[in-house]
Image 1 (cartoon, rainbow, N blue to C red):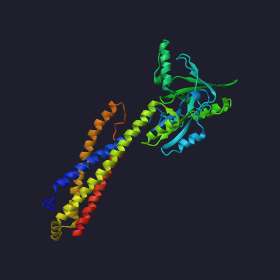
Image 2: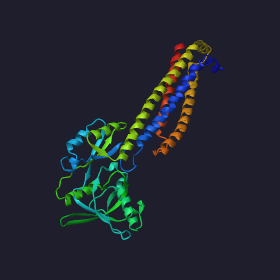
Image 3: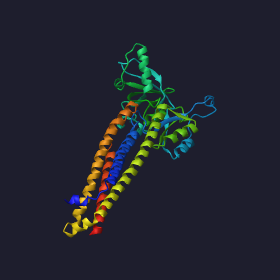
Image 4: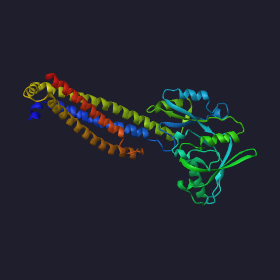
Length: 391
């Protein structure tokens, strides 16, 4: 009876418009936040590179081939790149300046040995367990990460030679060896493959091994930094690409494609999220305004109810619960629409070759709960203020 009395003077059209706007805003807000996070996670751990991170080198031109132009990076060049606003971090990729040979040392595998080019990078960019990426002189073996291209080449060679090919797991069990030498100073060190990468063409070794080789087997030739690792800010990868073109730098196309994809899609979802937030706020304000209008139209009924003994808190609770239920239904239906959109978009991404995690992000759920909480608090304060104005 009380509900019929308080909510009889409603403008149904205004309510429907506000509810529909809130529904669209909530749906696209959760969807945009979810996929913004998933897109930024895309590429993490795929090999060794983190999000928006690439390894670059200078393009080799005719003048570089003739020795007229340096193909290595000076410290001043690295500092200039690092100071750019859209760059998060720049790190040199350290290469060996000592002679090292890599080969097999296992009775179950045909002998193989070759001069090796080894590099090291910051462990935080490696997709291997941290406890495996560590070496000290005297350890049982040196952990290495092998370029996938080298592994494929070895398997192709073994197949063409009539030898049995080996799988990833088997390679990681094979005993291998590094031979370091400088003059008569020769050292044999056991090593073992602990992972693979598609992003680097050299064998990756821990920093401590590189320092050991430089200290004990280098001929004194200064180290040249021919590659650097660049980490760009999220959604600003286009600026990184422009900088590479301006400075005559290049990177693997696969890294550039991932970076562009994440930047474009990330920007798109940020725009959608911004519009969704505005839609939720505007719709919420319309609902609050609708509540104020409803209380204003029912001012006589509210005053009469209080005169005959109804406590203001009871009337406040009626208005509060009425609008909280409405927004609760909007939130539930919006989440259901998000799940339907997620099902469709996950299939679209998968068919397009973009493999993203399909689990629901907690941040999107928290955004939904936060929007509901903010509206509930606003509804209560509006109802309280409106009723006590009539008290």
